[in-house]
Length: 352
Image (cartoon, rainbow, N blue to C red):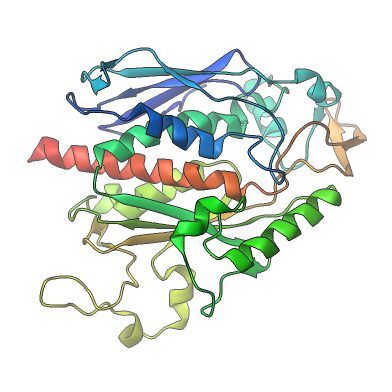
């Protein structure tokens, strides 16, 4: 299987499967001499790990990261940073019933068709467990970009979404299990997800991300546009079905006279419909984008599907699964954003 690496100057290569011994990776391109706060890296992993609330999968993983190389006395050496996360609560027996059955809307069928085999235990390499390694690398990338602030949050769950009347308070994001910056809306979202779980069903939603204190000049025209690389990063995340930045799809209903971001004398703009990126290059304004997540494919309901013999069969999901992936996706969105911006930042430094 190819395509296990992400990034150009700052490159992450990962390994492992959902129910293997461990997952992990190598992050290459980190400059020497960076003092890393290892507790902050672990904190980012804790934000992503399963079992953290009643509305997510109850798989119990400590998700403690063990660094193997590239860090000496808390400072980067400039060598590849190797790391590992042990899998300790992988109940593979929960997946025995799908050994020869293809789950609807999963990677089961396409993996089997492409490679002639698949790891049916939790989806193997296609599992969202893979994103834990991305969060480790993204947490390091955040510390390369010391002054840049990444804030992702739950913008909607199903039809429950922010309106212009809803206030936003970033300080409450980590104070509710939905990670919504409005306490009243967060409570409604939590109740809705609980209801969906009782029905044995799942629901999707939208994550919004705001990146502040962004350096100017990140990204390059044509094939390395910053928004294109952010889009690729977001579309790499499991269950993502859409990405837009700035005004996004809402911009189609605006006239050009309304949409244009007029300049202030210092080069900033009076509005930010561009989402902080123009011509593929950051302009110093906040980068804003949204990421749409589909409903989780595994349902605790009976569904029709097919098996390896192309026979129609009935199946029902078992085991521990998220009724809504959005709350746990927040740190993953931030991590992938940080990897993209750090890659562009380090590339700029190497040129200049």
